Image (cartoon, rainbow, N blue to C red; front, side):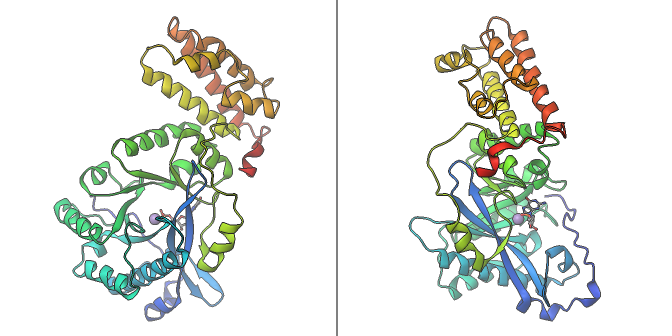
Amino acid sequence: MIKRPRRVYKPRNRSALEPNQLNANVQAAFQPIEDLRTGEIVGYEALARLMRGDQLLPPADFLSGLPQDALTELFRTMLGQAVSLRQSLGGDGPGPYVSVNVEVPLVLADGFVDLLRDVLDQHAFSPDGAVVLELLEGHATSDFARMSERLQAIRALGIRIALDDIGSAYSSLINLRDLPVDIMKLDQSFARGLRQKPRDLHFVLSLQSLAHSIDKHLVVEGVETVEIRDALRVLGVDLGQGYGIARPMPREAIASWVAGRPRATRAVEQTPKSLLGAYAGHLRVVEACRTLMGQPLPVAWEEASKDPHACGIGVFFDKHGLHDTNFGRAHKRFHEVMALYEADPASWRDGAEGFRQELERALADPSQRFRCDAVAA
Ligand code: G
Ligand code: MN
């Protein structure tokens, strides 16, 4: 791992910080992680909040400058609160997991595995995969052998490992290759700006494909709006986390939040519900065709390609009367050239690119603030 601190926490009012008071006043907020294919909540990330009077401070305002033993105690508190939440959720089957953030030096410190065992024993809890440690990339190590060994010992307790902030400045694919991790978390910066930079969906799609290939789960962070959530769902992303699903919330708020959600479904619904979702759908089709490498389209596709109202995007355009827009017409043209996929690949590519560009134009156009029915998703 690269030795550069990513998380340089800069407290705004460091003088008022009283480390000895810290842990009594740390409260975990929990942010749900959703299976985008089914709507099921599969996990909750514990995020530290410091209560100061009637204020709740985020980590950036109190973590900096804390000595190692205070950080260790903070982690102990967070893990305890997370395990306690997991126990209260109960339910049948494996149920949702809880995840806790941890800095690499703490993972490597003497006694860390004992600390984990200690907290689990206190709660008489056997995690069996329901506890996840999110490795922050901050002060990483170059000693992969030692880190791997440590992570294996942690996994032997039934705790799974997530690599946090993948794709951020200080994270490297080498970590993913050389460390025994179960879950990849894609840095917020990829999903958050998708309306402005829809082409970033290529990175998301590739990371999801990599995750599937190496048999890991991918959580895409920064799902800030329902529209982004829609696009990721259409793209085929497994798991998402962000304000567009839920903000971090206190433990007491979770039950009523869960009760107020629509029931999870098993059906995979590919029809987009937003313009960004339509963009994701198109990107998927183009990528699938590329993967065919010039071989004939599947028969079902060939049939669907003849009717611009039959595909998922067409259904969405019908619903909102969008066929007669620039991007709607570009969509029809793409269907026309779909039949040329083998005979005239250049025309096919022009059609695909034309539709993509019209969608990008519409997404960038402030008068086209069309977000449609993703809100109801
Ligand atoms: O990378 P990490 O998992 O540690 O990030 C968690 C932080 O990101 C928390 O502070 C949380 O409040 C914040 N966060 C979570 N979801 C979103 C989101 O959709 N948008 C933004 N801007 N911040 C988010
Ligand atoms: Mn995290």
